Length: 310
Image 1 (cartoon, rainbow, N blue to C red):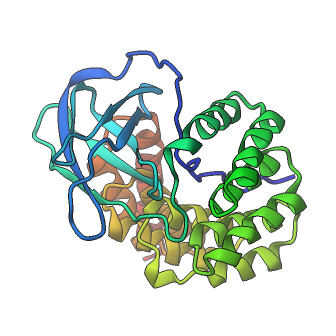
Image 2 (tube, helix red, strand yellow):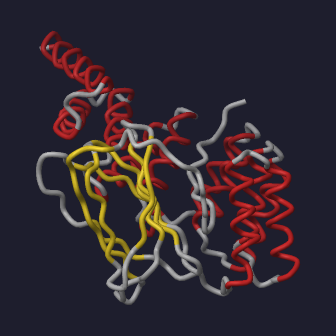
């Protein structure tokens, strides 16, 4: 059975995994985290993961909302931002090792209608650790105990749904994702997850209906846009996929996975010159990887195809 992409960060993830230091290099980058009013957020956990090195590390923001990452290698990094009481933020950034990197600034949205107190931390941390260890039934029990003691913490229903999703119990996963929508009817992430449960059950029309409920103009997370686009791509809805991929790279012009898939969508639709333009843009950001060699082959093939057709 085809699996929908599971790109959603666990609520308030508190991982204790020790990663290797293959990410070490000569680069450096810093950033700032603010709330919706522009106030700096202190003690935000910043998790950085190098796709090239397949390793990473964590840091936290100071009183000015600032975080720093020194002595890291270049390439694409996934960066997660997490703080108790705020919706997690996920992004991807291209880090340069031998030249200056722009500061990374993000805003985090406070969770509405649900205050996560200090009393919740231990069970939440334990549940997330169990989830990371793929002990989904035990993680479910930990999350369930939170809901039983603090019914207003409705956002934890998403974590419970994630457990059922990983256990391939998609009906139950949908049930808990819907509990989030009962309290927050505009929660785009919950809608996306419900769509994924239908996609994994092979009910593509219902999946598309749920993806269509998400207000396109309000999606400002390139990962979410990429994820929806890929679900459309996987069921051969290439025009729809193109729309989401385009928006993802408009928001983040160095989003390598987004550029690659955008190029593929153009190629599949026969938009040969547009595919060349996107692939060449990709190569400006990533000229040396294994995937870059493949992209270069696409460009050469398409240019020859255009030339032969004249």
